Image 1 (tube, helix red, strand yellow):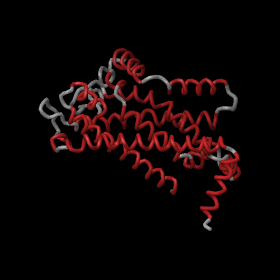
Image 2: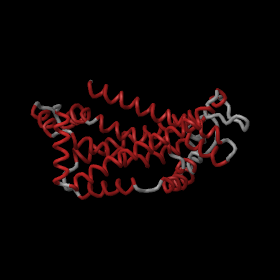
Image 3: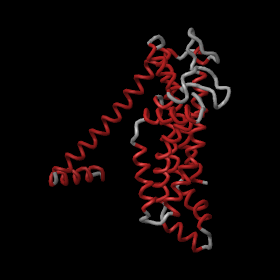
Image 4: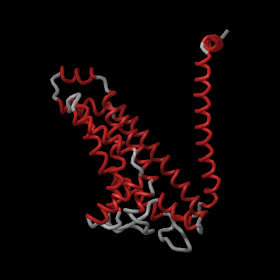
Length: 287
């Protein structure tokens, strides 16, 4: 008799003794199946409705009423993502390092910061958009620009990067720090040469989630970056991202086929970024 059969019989006996465990197990399996089914359905729906309309004209360098090209929106998405990460990632990582490695435990100030970051994570994106419009667009005088949108998005994803980095740093065993101190390394060297490299996979996971939110954001960008369908001349130029481009096409009701095709490209971009980040995380971990 195989070990799998014995294990299955043992599990069934334990479930008979504790029926509640069987119910919980069935609920967990049902939740997993439903989640997987919904994911497959969404991907299949987007691909079925969008792939047939992926034409070379969609990747034209010029956007017009006759050809709703997504190329300017794709370039704007890449620029917006890079600008937002350039602002948010250093601030989020260094803030998390301070909270975990330098701030004293039980510090009231640290508790206030953590409460604030958790509160910021729950604020709707439209509120961030209105704040960005009032502060960056109007008060700072930047107008509808990529820079205003990038600063708004960096504020949105900053709590996410901070919390994920903080948890990743906490997951590093204290023995790593103690061993480094025992060899004569200082605090700064220990953090950047021992602790931070060990926490890279967890940090990158937070960055990947932040990228997903940046790429898929619409409400905050409509009020800050604008909806101009053109290549930006500078960071002070207005421009739409892929998500905003898809929203505008769908809301107008005249370019639904192009909107579905844009959704396919958006899906490919997100999957590509996640795959690239995972490969990078594995290489950095091995190094």
